[in-house]
Amino acid sequence: MAMRKSFLIVGPVLILAALTGRGYLGAVRESPQHRYQRAEALYHQGKLDLAIDEMQRALRDDPRQVEIRDALGTLYQMQGRMDDEIKVYEQGIRLMPNDPRMYYALGMARYAGKRYDDAAEQVLKCLRIGPYDPQYTHLLGMCYERSGKLAEAYAFWNANARDYPEDEVTRRGLRRVQRKLASKQVAGIKASLNQTATRSGPSSKLTPAKNSDRP
Image 1 (tube, rainbow, N blue to C red):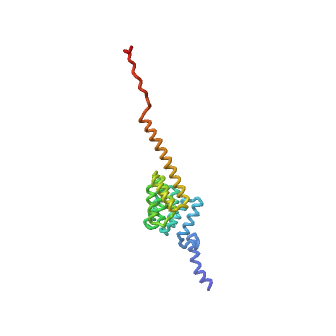
Image 2: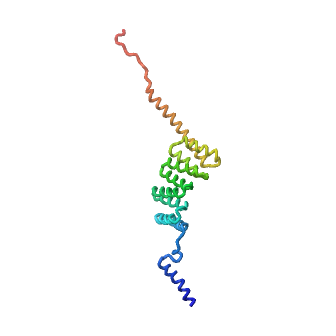
């Protein structure tokens, strides 16, 4: 009798497992973290499309999980799907407007797309929301440099070096911009000299005209 009762309990479980093809545990809904880990494993196996599918499912189950959202955006970037990457981050900003990580992720996407002014705008939002994170300031300095705003870049790196003198990335950025400014100044001087020489033209000596009537 006890065996019959046991069969009545276990039997439906075995049937469910057979129908799902994934076993009893597979019938239980997986957590977003498990899907994230599976997507990560698929990525390392070189199965990028499957990794994206799994990460999308993880994000649908937990749309406020920054780690999953950021990972999905990174996978999109690897496929060259920049519009999808940006869309993921913009959705994250709407859901979590006070999370600086979402603005930073969007800033990185804009930077990768060479939209440096847009990237700088997102990083400034990170810094306003806080807390301070050196990667935010590093990205902002690079945005100024890449957009050719060397004066702003110098002022930013210089101020950051005063506030965080041990930050090696900031010190390197400051030295790099100083070299660029010095090179630009030398180039400007050379250009000015060339323009002056061009305007003055070749020098010529006046010679008196011959007078055939002179004795």
